[in-house]
Length: 260
Image (cartoon, rainbow, N blue to C red):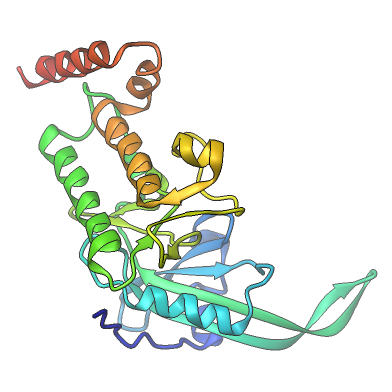
């Protein structure tokens, strides 16, 4: 049984205050689904405020359902939802060269703030960056997060867009899986989809060729990340030029040279 904590709704004017009016100086990043801002609460706590772009087909009922899906996620290796906002307001908007009064829906998801940003900022080859113990701990933490999503929820959740940019690191470099914009609660373990998911370079052949999604899609993406954690982006590119055995021997040799 999944037990969701009660995540509070946060008023729009408070989001504006926390993000200094959604200023560019507070922007942490942007993606397909929205912009992320650093929010500072009155008590000094930092949070990440994700203001969502308008999404076709996302009505109030579906948003509340997706919000509940995020509420149930309670694991040390999954980014925690701490608040949300969903309201339709009457505002002046541009239309045919003039400003008219219309209804505008604003939605936001607020998450715990991850001080060290994304894993993408820390990928490096064997000769620099994090030592082996730190890299192994990151790999182990991500695997625990996926074991929770795939096996420990009442209904498994598939992330469907795992990549280094969606793995966030806290102040102790503990990894947490985030950005569940494409994720799905799946009744069936395997199914065919007509939707576009994931990021090129992290998708398995069965999805590319036949649009099959299952937990194996996340596992394939995770394996790509493991290689990039161990060998860095440059090392990963070499894996396409070498046989599996040659690549393994190269990575082993590089790590032995660093550890000596």
